[in-house]
Length: 321
Image (tube, rainbow, N blue to C red; front, side):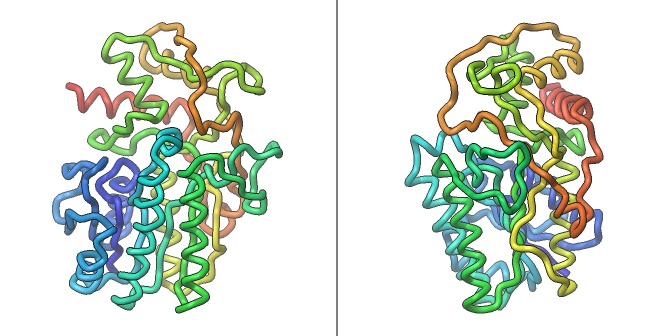
């Protein structure tokens, strides 16, 4: 069995590619390296340097490598920046997904696991988000992910696409020292890079309606997330039924200030974060139940917040050495 992973040279995608390798499934990576890294792709894994907007190249890769299923992660992933760059966000995330689905249809590939996001919920008015919680995205990024789910749903109706969408919450940590989060907008790399460069980490807003005034999030370890993709793809390949969407969340919230405290403990660097203005597109609190994914995908949180912070710090240090 062969799985094509779009965005497989990125932080999350590269972890997923390695998880497939450990599970004995071959992978093909399609990535334009706009935010990914060629050296994140393991030796021996076929690599296609291309954008998913190029339907012809993607269709050719699907046919030439005899792909059985797709895991779709490629896209523009920055919720805050998407507010200033809505057209770019829609081009990459909506038009890109349309192009990929067209290529799959042409190549006769009818199975896909889609990288969705907690951003589809916006700021929910419930303490614990489930898959039945109404969607109300507050950024072009969140809207584009919801449209992606609709595209899969409508493709299933039209030509029998078999699919599931995994709604990520905050993905952090590292499974191996040579893979780490290089996003210029995610909390962990922002804090860690600041400390490595001798700067004071920043908190974007401390006036949210939360316990300590900072945003509360549901953090999941990237290794646990990667394993869920392998299980989902295998079930699709085996013809087993899956729900259209699953939350990959822990059920527990951690505030940005609490993360800062955990980082100080893991690194041994004592600091008091600087508080700045809120960042556009950030909801105050979003915590999810992973109960549905636990039953169908065997989803479980195997790593603590301390594990997440420590592994992220060690991987980033290994890169800077």
